[in-house]
Image (tube, rainbow, N blue to C red; front, side):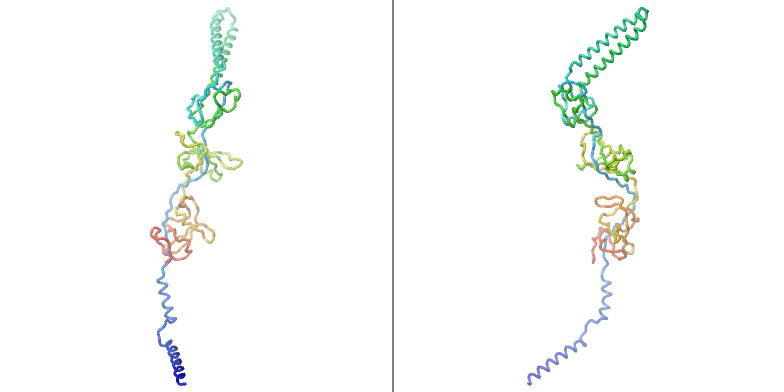
Length: 365
């Protein structure tokens, strides 16, 4: 019994000491916690964003159009007389100068017809010279002079026709160009395909870049305007607009535009994909990084900017020209500080810490 009492008294004493510690030992009160919060808030930094100063300039935007190259001239050459093809001087890819001989057909008595017609002219001329003296002296009626002169003119016409028929046996290039297709072989009778295709040739200088333009973009294009043509091979060449159609295509409702490009060495092939860029009239615009664009809660496209007091605001913009890494836009005042990093983590009216874009990446601290 005596031991039990000692244990009970010990437990009571321990409980009393624990309760008393709440009154005598120091502890954080509500007032002290309230006093600490303002200091913590003051120590917390603002959200940091990167900004870039912008400037409004006169920007000459470009109208981009996709199309293809097209040879300036294309012709299909046919045989215009009968005969057998006895000489062929070209093959696919052959480069020709104007009046180069492409092919020669067999004579088939054409030269003999020329000689016969020439002899007839000489005969008619001699008869006219001999009888003119008799007519002038009155030995022959003057009416015979008209008949003799008409006979001479008829003989000359026959001679010219014979020479033309002979020349048709020699097929020449009508202008400088390249043979793209060949349909004949030596020994084939031209009589069997008279009027049919012998070969096709194209002129590669100048080369045309042909595009189809919608009616909304047609107003900015004029004949003589410069243009840059970028080929699918990566090569870029300069040219000028040569033709702007005044009639729309019935199927696509677009207008044909031709850009003439020098191609003296023939390196630009016919039918290759090309992109044409035509500079338009300059407009006031600001260049901003593509990543700076954002969308407001209303669905408007724009940028977030920072005032001198560090307050965020949203500015709607209009797209002037789209580049690969940047955008030319309108609607931004000159000297505006545009948020280029961190714009999607802040809202309008929020106060932020703005630093130059090159100094820091947007982060919250």
